[in-house]
Image (tube, rainbow over all chains, first blue to last red; front, side, top):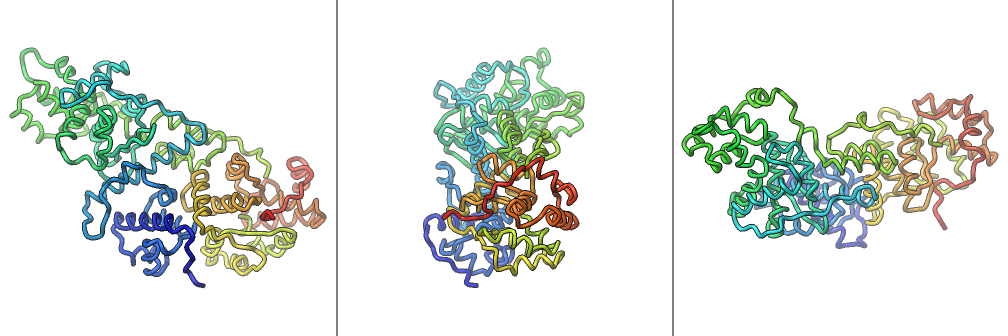
Length: 371
Length: 178
């Protein structure tokens, strides 16, 4: 049978082909390897990538399975912000570019899933909120963090669920399996962010707070998508917001020893209570004047162990951004859609990104359905 | 989706006879699923060899978009592809989807799709005089013997149909609109 099909929608097929090529490069696969996975000839892969050969539903489904991306990813157009990133090319591909691409896929998929639930009429995200003043430096970013705490009535203590805080401010965060730290974007009336599940819980919270910073601080930062490993000036401003939001300087003043500097064990307790990474805790301690630079240097070398951190909070479970993968309002919408048979259990589990398994879903009375 | 069990029960000819007035289709996705199962169940090859079953390849841009839309409702994993492809074909061709997965039936109907199961198909054949209740019951038992999950046994087929389906409407299965 001839496997070559005539083209009717050349632009769409070219877009699909480009996505296939990018996914293949990000997966570090050659055309030969992809061809073997799909049981196609290598020349067919080359033609698909050039947009001169159609793919059918089954081939597209297999591509989604091989690359571990949803099928809809090949068909949807990239959000405007994502489309501004540097293109993936065979000869310039770096690990950072691959990581960035995986985060973009996760972000695009997350946005599509949110739009699906909105389209079903079962999800109504909150309006995006922003800090009313212009932020030009780190001290302005810290003021913005105080504004968030005051605006939401959080008080000076540890933030229990950062996921909920983000949702209340209009940013929908998902914890995803992609490598890297996190990424965020604003498209129309939706602000979305993804945080990598890889890395310790403190780092995940720092990343989520960082992505919230992109939203709160303003538009000029929200276009800066990608892995936020670069510590340029703008990222430093965002990091100051994130650190102050998670662990306010006031917390050091409230717990410091009379007339003295704080010791490592004091910081371990704060890191455990506020669930912050050790590096962020030490950095905030220095900024708050609770620890001297030389002592901080020594402390940075001695990360607290898990037992030390758990001991500090009485071995209480710390679920944020570990077992909680999606915002509460979104999770509720998924369950509503499931209960109304708008989605199957299988799809509900996918949408919840591992937060539940099928057995966790409520019983649905479909025994009476007439077949 | 009942093709698998009709083939394994060696009743594919019966299914063909039940659908003689209809245009019947399956999808390329389902066909390839069946092909993958041939080694374990050689009788599945009979589906691949049939000449009365049309094929929806789902290879135009609108068709694969429709397929993608149904994966967003049914699920994206490999075990969901067949169901999603059948619903996409039924959606595109304004046809009736046949599946015996209760959950999929509920989801398909939630979006206005006409979805029925094997028992409905047999009941329809009875109401059209193509099959009597005993013969339909025998088919039910033969299908159940292959591991197919059906809501009734051969002996309870008649009472199940009277209780749950009533008099069958004569709606063509996989009939494309003129």
